[in-house]
Image 1 (cartoon, protein in one colour):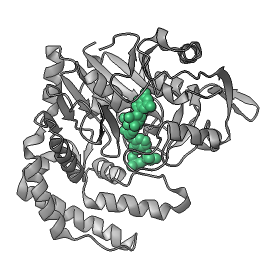
Image 2 (spheres, helix red, strand yellow):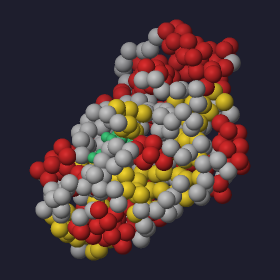
Image 3 (cartoon, helix red, strand yellow):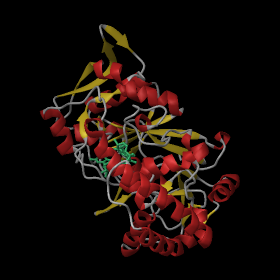
Length: 427
Ligand code: GDP
Ligand code: IMO
Ligand code: MG
């Protein structure tokens, strides 16, 4: 299929980076449409590990065009340091473009993100403190500053100066913190503007023309369905739409131009940050998963909360994204567990719940209803086909397909490109 959306089906960190890099081998273009450098996508090539935050995971192939779409919030400092570190590794960065409509993250966004988290106290969201929410707030308030503004020096200085004054008032009066240095920020951002200039384009034209030519275009989701500001575990969510629909706005393409949606699902569940998590294992089993899966945040280094696979969540993701196939990730991490569980339903005050509830108060009181599976002990990290997998691992995969109602088209048995089992060619 020429255009494929990749979305996270859980709370992010499902392994999207690995699969995007894998599929990007045959892609002409990879497009980000939302989020910012709150994302952390790990790509392993040989013995080298790349952590990508703003730059699409197609960058490691010379011929793939990488687009940072209009729906992304772009931190110039983060972007330029990523570019620099890729250059040091000899990666070609000439094929990266930033939408002229993408909103820019400024130091006051990061400052307000951190200050508002501290002020929330017990009710902290656990954000990445990258200024994501405050930047999207400005966008919605219609006071944001976009990449195209960076190219109009006088107007840019005027807009930025006004924003710094406004934000300093908030920082001083509401948060009782020290105001930011206006001149310093302006000087710094004028330097960034010069450096960003060659990357800034009308990316909606580039994406449209690629799709019209029949080029293969991958849309790279960041975060995951349950972090969607509309559909996720609100308010413990991010401030964008990491679901497939998010691309129609965030990449500026019509829905008729998306052919398939691949849902990335971890063989278990993880979450970073706060909020309810029905299948969480706050015990030695959760710890065992965390160690085996190296479950520590790519962006913040925080230990990820771990639990069994929850198909109430995955079914919700299938429904809300129009998922046509799944890629099951980190299956190797479950090797050695005597028993593996899948949550099929929730129980809420004696009642069986099939659909993921909106109310967090209700969700907090939901108990997981599990189906148990016998585990396997064989090393699966070198399996190349579905048939190579142990009987118990196959049964686990078939059970997921049956519970969720969508085929598992890819199985990942390790972080490397070679540790990927393709059951159905999709791209
Ligand atoms: P993303 O945010 O969805 O791109 O996921 P992250 O990169 O934040 O987290 C996924 C982690 O799992 C990374 O460290 C990957 O290198 C790693 N990974 C991906 N697929 C597999 C797999 O099948 N097995 C193992 N053991 N690790 C994997
Ligand atoms: P990738 O793309 C996991 C979480 C944060 C926090 C909440 C809000 O690597 O899957 P924010 O800084 O966005 O305002 O924080 O969202 N979060 C992620 N969790 N993976 C991510 O991205 C995330 N991006 C944001 O931990 O709970
Ligand atoms: Mg991640």
